[in-house]
Image 1 (cartoon, rainbow, N blue to C red):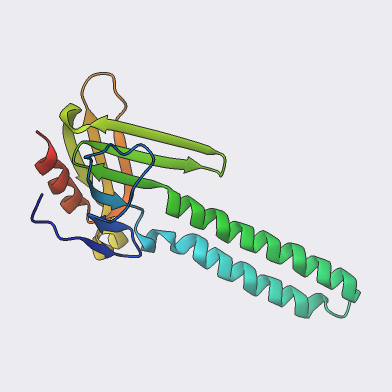
Image 2 (image 1 turned 180 degrees about the vertical axis):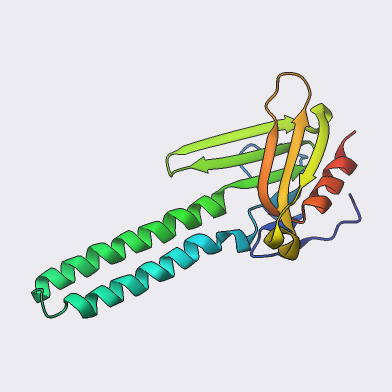
Length: 178
């Protein structure tokens, strides 16, 4: 793993040897990969946000003559608050759902809503199998897919969904397994 050069790409969704630290990192533990969902997989909520803005603007033109200025202001205020909250929560979900691969272990951090965090980790010595799956038109064009890490015994398996370069991630994990 010494031949990997530090790099950040795809809006920090595939970072090799980043200069990051995380809360449970050991003293001599080095981060090899930090993974997030591919940015192209975020298009649905981005398009929905744009459509919501257009609908709000359209409603302003349609109902402008029927509502009082104060009613229009409050309707716009709540509409914009809803749209920005939708954008903010989707961005946070993308940004904080992260996979970390170190020289000692594999960690999957999932945020479900804002107040619930699930952290799954396994030692590299307990990894039995690593599988990359990629299917579909967009997944083949933009090179993203899922990586499944099967662990020994009763430990929970780790999944990374919609990450960039799944075959390369599988290759890196397999090279780290003792």
